[in-house]
Amino acid sequence: MRISAKGRYAIAALLRMAQAGKDTVVNVTRLSEDLGISRIYLEQVFSLLKRAQLVTSTQGAQGGYRLTRSPAQISALDMLRATDTALFEQPGKTLGADAQDAEAALELVSTKLKQSVEQTLSSLYLSDLLEEAARSRDNYMFFI
Image (cartoon, rainbow, N blue to C red):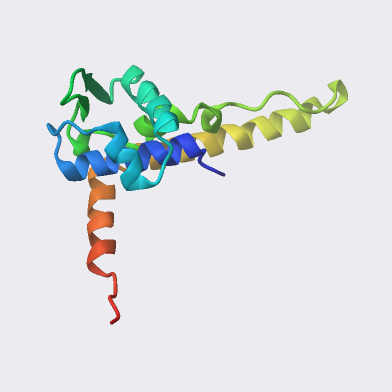
């Protein structure tokens, strides 16, 4: 299983926004520089996040985006459903008409996998990612 670039960028951007604080307006240009991501591509990601109502935008010189909910209320499932639709697509039928039994078995595998992934992602929140990022930062070794 592979998360798309849009999905990864969405998670990284929302993590940075959560680190800044729920009500902090974050500028896309500054965020793209901080993450090393193309500003134009990141704007496309934010368009999807806005459509999913995970962020709101503010116009003007001090404009940007801010989270619509607290990090404890935004799941990884929310983030990836907004930006990585291919991750949740059910595959079409791939076998011939004489292999309906095998096709049914494959569909069961696909359904169980999708349920498992969605259950896992729905139990992982942006607040969990904040904690992991803080732990990772605290464990970083500096050598002089």
